[in-house]
Amino acid sequence: MRVSAFMLTAALALSVSGESLVLSFVEKLMKKMVFAGFMALAWAGMVGADAPTSTVFTNGETVVFLGDSITQQAHFIRFITDFYLTRYPERAIRWVNAGIAGNSMDGGKNCVSNDVAPYAPTTVAVMYGMNDAAAAGPYHEGYPDGKEREKQLNVAKHYVRNTSRLAERLREHVPQAKLLFLTPSIYESARPDAKGRPVNPGWNGTLGLYSEFLRAAAATGAWEVADIHSPMTAFNRAQQEINPKFSAVSPDDRVHPNVGGGFFMAGSFLKAQGVSPVVSDITLDAAAVTTVRAENAEVSALKKTADGYVFTVLEKALPFPVAKDAGTIACRIPFRSELNRERFRVKGLAKGLWTLAIDGEEVYTASSGEFGFGVDLGRNDATPQMRQASKVTALNRERHACEAELRAWASVRWWLALTRRVADPDDMEQVKDWASKNDLTAGWYQKNVLSYIGNWPKRAETRAKIDAMDRELDALRKPVPHVWTLRLRKEGEVLLKARDLSPAEGQIQIQSEGHGVEIRRITIKPL
Image (cartoon, rainbow, N blue to C red; front, side, top):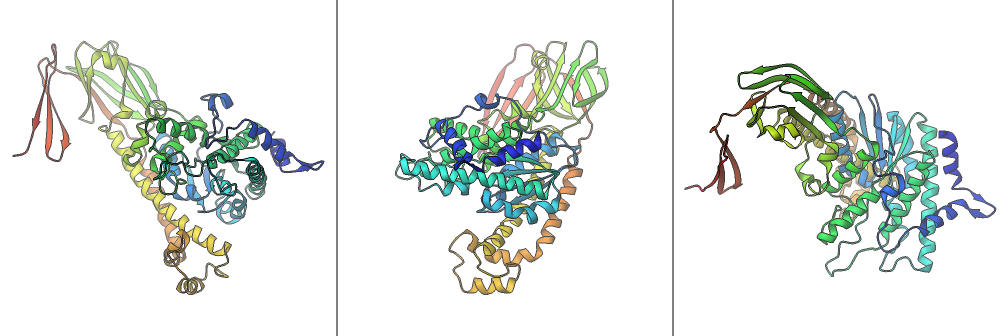
């Protein structure tokens, strides 16, 4: 099935009886598209709302992400790996960023031998499209008209052909690897410019056309797919109906997802894989003093005490801490409820208010009814397991920033070779000579030439630094057992909670625990 499906996809790039099958395929897709700046496509109508379209990464894998500058900057890769590090801490997976800023599906095949094959990947995750779609421009209101439709069709035809050729090159050089294509992230046309006008309307529609092709080919078994474009387009549109200035993409260039956009992409990727949404799911029976359920966790030494219960929990995963720099988008999507469930439930507790403490630290106080219904600790930043996870993701952020910088230097090298600025981009004397004679403020590559000169010769040291951080992450993410206690609070016991309102004032909430709850708020201002 795998071989025949691939041959079917490659056949899309062939001409039969003078008529391109690619052209025919793309024309059929275009009839389903709405060319007004956005692609209107229902994800549920294509594959089902929750049907996985790719497989979960397993222990021992090496995953190479191949793509353009959106891959190179690594926002979405960082959050994907955050998830795997915390949700599957027992899995040893090597992650490699092979992004090249400015590259396209056509150029991707030239990166296989140097940037992919040396790592012997088990999966190659490919995302191109943004630079490919630029060729269908210039974009404008009403795009595409008659002649532009033909141009857009031809550009889409080349994308299909180049995708098949890249897949063929990957099959040749890394035959052991599973191919996973990501549909491209969005181009931000809708957010108005300073004059209130959309920018390059039609660009995102071209990306939508590419996305439909990748998904249609995946449906034949040619490769796996993770749809980013469709949910990201729908999400961005929905948010802009509330706030027209909202965007999951940088407002500066309208191409690169911001950190929150990378978080959204990662969530879409993980849902496409059908990853486990459960950190742990524990249910205790207080009356029977027994464990009813312990999914992805081990509960031991459960016993009744004078004022409650004590037991030891070893969760087999860590909760996922949502990074502050992704918060503006994370708060708008149901990531925690759909992909970060750390549920704790106790049936049959005596009526009253109960406090859960982990390793002696109080983390949650609720009524017996709330504990009976179940509380979600995946939202609780006070737990020791969340603090451990936060250390993991902080180091992982540093790790991917380091690799993104390495790939920025690789991108400069690629540009120097592609544009023939120098005969040998690895000869720093040639590069220095070129730099001394040219404007190093003319563009992104030029601005990074001096950094390239200083750091590319030391790239092995940078890679060693990344590998060292990976080893540190392996040790840091291992779950450890914690002692949990549940204590019934005494009637009339006072619980003080202080919350910062601002640097100038604080608030103390005084809550009388027990029958008849009285709450008073006192604002404290410094003298």
